[in-house]
Image 1 (cartoon, helix red, strand yellow):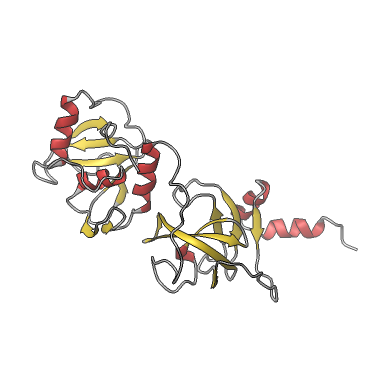
Image 2 (tube, helix red, strand yellow):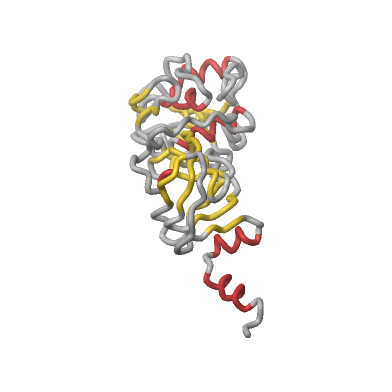
Length: 267
């Protein structure tokens, strides 16, 4: 007879490092077994995990935050039950996340599923009615900005759609704070207004969620440019597609940073 722990040792050697870490943290790893029946739930069924290259799809506690803990890993071929969906973090151009109730409770990216439409809710799938992302207004602004990385056009979440982001940087940061428009003609006008109110900082690293301003030349004439700081030396900016860049990306003189207008309540 084999030692009772020999099978466990073999399994751990064969598992990817990610899955081993999840086991160590107490998360559940779900595998597909031939002939295993899928329990019946009230949600939408008939779809499964695919395209993970054997690594498995992480079931996360939030669809918005890249650092949200994983509670399970679903192997390719694992069926799931979707209860509802939201627009969350952007995964290769797909922002749809499904809240699932089987085989684990949490959120999965639509990108790694067999669902029929790309970046679309399932037929008959409702919008999740839960609370918005938690945290400060800066946290929520960054969660939204990260969710649209890779997109070229507005996604309709504030009543508009198919409006290009390129050349509309001040509207982009306003969208991050839940506003359809910033209320300023240009990013440079926005900067001048905040500067006149004594809200511009010219030293130190811009904190997470702060607006980072640049003078006009050479990218937008005298309109200037504004980006959203992630607080770690990275910035999210509008461009032909929304992207993550360094502080030097615009190629224009740096003016300083400010927290978003105090009257902007956020998402």
